[in-house]
Image 1: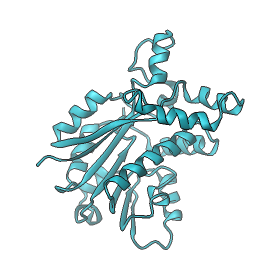
Image 2: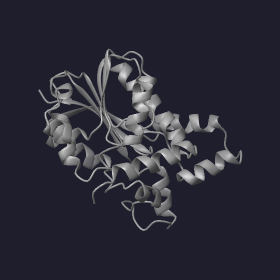
Image 3: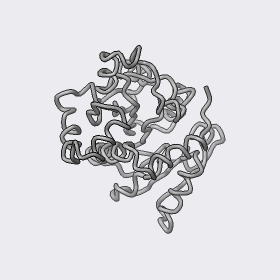
Image 4: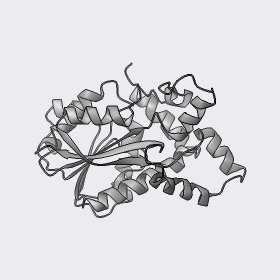
Length: 254
């Protein structure tokens, strides 16, 4: 199934404005991403798909930042945020198209850190995406890849409670965002290794016990506090495979 990127962007923006629980997930995702970027001294950065919050808004340590964003509503938001910043390059396209069309800003750059967050389960052809991204990696490039975890705590609970028939079924929310077949950690690692990418770190972000709508209801009704969310985020140290999102940091094989 192909993705209507403009429809995707509009739905994501709607959720963002309404402070759907995704709003909280963005916060915790970005917190961990920044920790990883700081750990690996990211300076010349490529962000593939920036959403409504480009990473440069929260990570001022960059020297050069390139963003490739196909969804118009998200691209235009990034343009507004990047106004007067000469060390930021914005490309309104899919990264696959940009590489095939020989866009110089990508092919001539030497990125030391590439962000590919929440995309592998959203594109129709994750192999093509990785093949293209691999062309942008030199020997010292770190590539951070993340995806929805089909074995996260809330999905395991839903399965064991008989709410969903199997773990690889897309939720209604996932369908509204046109997500494709989910990838668990085992399959993501196999896919990365197919493109000669060595995994140097792996894990998950944020233990989410319930679906987005349920988590929002718990917060809205004062049943849990924001402090509990911090605790759930810290719980990945005990349950590293059960976070809502899984990630791998890779580098090209020697």
